[in-house]
Image (cartoon, rainbow, N blue to C red):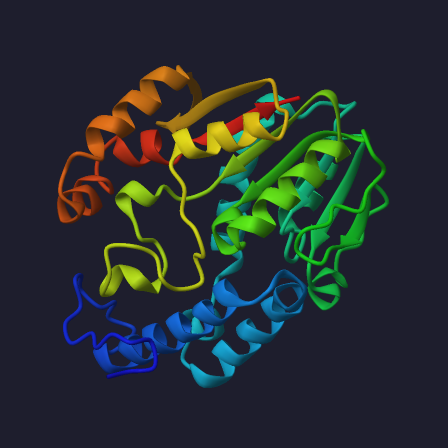
Length: 288
């Protein structure tokens, strides 16, 4: 029996060529153990644990892809360009932009060329230290707080962030974010869908996320969550063939209901093919 209380002996999907099965299984067991520590910690302890568990993960899993994968400048630029393409319809000269989980600030710096002012928010002071631009202000958060002037933001954005936050903290962060957004402003959120997941290291051994994706959501769940904190409207945008296309929310939520009836293994495999990822993991725009 392993540290997580399970004993994975066979991966559900092919291990990437850059890693071996033993390394991936070790990574999985360590991440599940640390994620459980986060899930069960009281709030006051949890806010201080986020950085600690990631540090411990990288120490105990020295061949973690985030430590060993080298991203070329061309790959980095392409990633930024893809996200800019999604944001472009919503960014103008008067936009005050806030990126949650800004990391090295690559995206925020690109948006700054189009917007009036930008906030780059992250939990790590060190990772923000290299973000330098006259229209970009760096903001340090504890994982829940959004310490910018109330009602100052016209467009907030997060990419692959919400799934890493404890559900209770995510709700608190959403409330703080709502206060930061100006009337008529919006929050554009992109996060993986649990119906074709899991999307963390759990995917090799589990049918649900048990690692550092503390909660994966459906579009239906997110829409209810956004309305629950006060957003008056939720819109859905999918990227297909390089274009951003608005989809009816009712269509996406209806598709999810039918898709959820499939066995988990079918959902996982079909959910990564053709047009389905665009429908299951669209950009959700919550309008205040």
